[in-house]
Length: 389
Ligand SMILES: *Cc1c(COP(=O)(O)O)cnc(C)c1O
Image 1: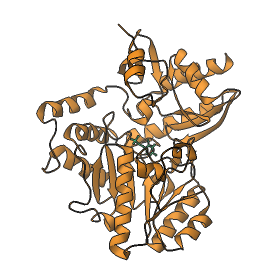
Image 2 (image 1 turned 90 degrees about the horizontal axis):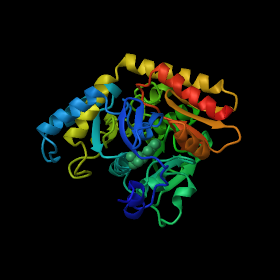
Image 3 (image 1 turned 45 degrees about the vertical axis):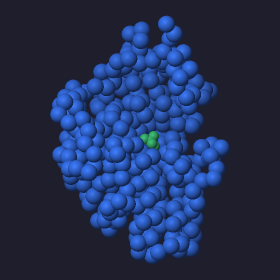
């Protein structure tokens, strides 16, 4: 029989440059490959498995729902869906939620919402959306257009019109664009994830908030990666002292199942009404049961712990000789390693039983938020040994 690697290469479109690793099982922060070798997982499936692999309570919630009602269309009411929307709103102070299936889809929803909000109030000619250089918002046509990185823009022309890109921190450039009167939204990540784990300047974010208020432009914060406790607060915007008009969530929300959410504040929560948007799978009961469990686990103590562990991890990394430019917030961490590329370092990590991610030139860590101090120390020991060789 051919190996899984060969079958994959032959039949799955080669859009991912996969590492030479096939995982078959996981428990908590540990994953196991086909040969039974153990790994410490600091990737959480790109920030998705926020409670680690197969957390028992999560598995129970999901399987209970699975055995009760696997899917129901959005033409009907469903308890896990309604209760998740309620918890999200109560948790964040938002007014209403739309459920999608991924980060890109959540951002698509936010883009549509912003354009309709402006059209309803001001008519045509106000469709422009400002995003940041070095941002990442997804791979669909609209979210790819929103993504301010040329590398993603090859081949796929023409893009949607009416997107402009501004350097993070350059409030004058945002102001200049907004003052032309054709802007309906500013969309940004608070810590640019794929862009290299780059936190934005707090004053810049606050200035954008004020500018948006003054000009009735919607502020959209893409918390697909930073949200749901990743930075040690439920939403990263709590660190920045702002609240967006629209916030998008995805990665960690389902604890390992595909879900996206668009959270809208009162001022724009009625913008998408009957027929204006929809999704067949969005808010599926099983996925919502997983997310409901995640939210129930993520109380104040849980978040405080995650924040503390993030600080500890970052401090200890910075103490290692050869580690440079440690950046991030909570358990969203980036760093460089002297004399090696991030991708070579990650490849070497896999050989040593450590799963990490890259974000441009940075090594990126998005461990399960449930990681323990002992597990962090174990990971640090491996990282140290890799640098000292
Ligand atoms: C991952 C990510 C997305 C895209 O999410 P998908 O689920 O892959 O569509 C969008 N925005 C940010 C900030 C992300 O990190």
